[in-house]
Length: 367
Image (cartoon, rainbow, N blue to C red; front, side, top):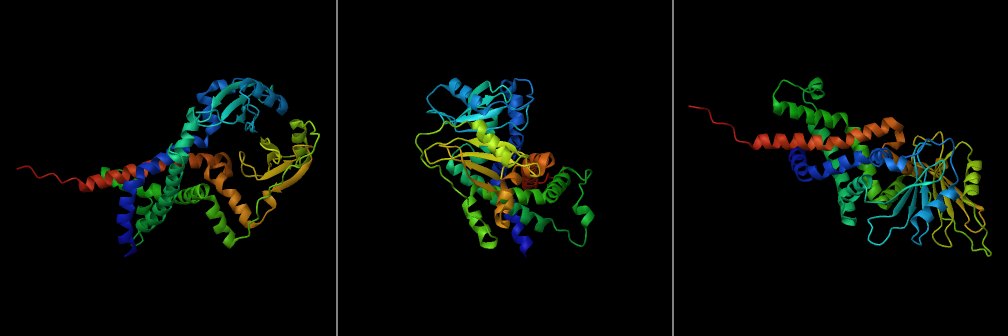
């Protein structure tokens, strides 16, 4: 009864939303290796010798500000994943631009390599396509709907696939000599079942990224979740000259084995400096669950958020984003997510072919 209901739903929802889900998946694959792809497509952003050590952050900000020279101040620096990758300093977007202004920085010499607007080079275009179908807020909601669609396809697909009469071997294999229809049918079901755990993970984590607060509240109903801290700088005159390199040294002194991931600069008087760290025992490389907050007037450490020491619900929420982009499982995880992004297109193509073949009238026998 349930299977008979799910078959037409699986088929027609797939025909209706399959193309959009394919676009979401392929664009997602393209941003799994976002920085590597960007450095390949725009070699001028990585035109330097691999650094032997990190250069001065203060010099990098000063050089970037002078190069931009439009009256705005930098808002953050995202460090390269290694000493052969550029830092990215971000500035507020200029009027008419698709996104913030970004300056690529040599990590060793702190010299400017390139200045670009986010959203106007290929990798950021793939980001916009994946996050919102290039259509803004409504597109983001539609991407969230795609997450629910993928979850439905995963659950309904396993019910439809479940072998009858114990025919397990046939359920896990592809018959290559049974004709085009049989090949497409077997490819559709085996791709779906082999990657079922990945599809479920991507759908749930994708839903959380789009609807973070509702999912946060749902998790909090089951598991303890701490509220995020929000320390503020205390206005203190006269303002002391803050050296960002010294704040970075303080952060690394607190966690000597860690690596700085990002540094966020204050935007208003109550904002602190924020430095995020990645630890050697963290399963991810591009993500941080530890943040140190420094007063922007005197440079004193205000507070520390260490997500590794929080409750089960908070730790669970920390895993959603790095699981979604594969970073949580290192290079292996990124490769799996990269491959998985192309598979909705395979499932849509094979499903579309089977639907077309069933609708195609049989040839009349020749007299």
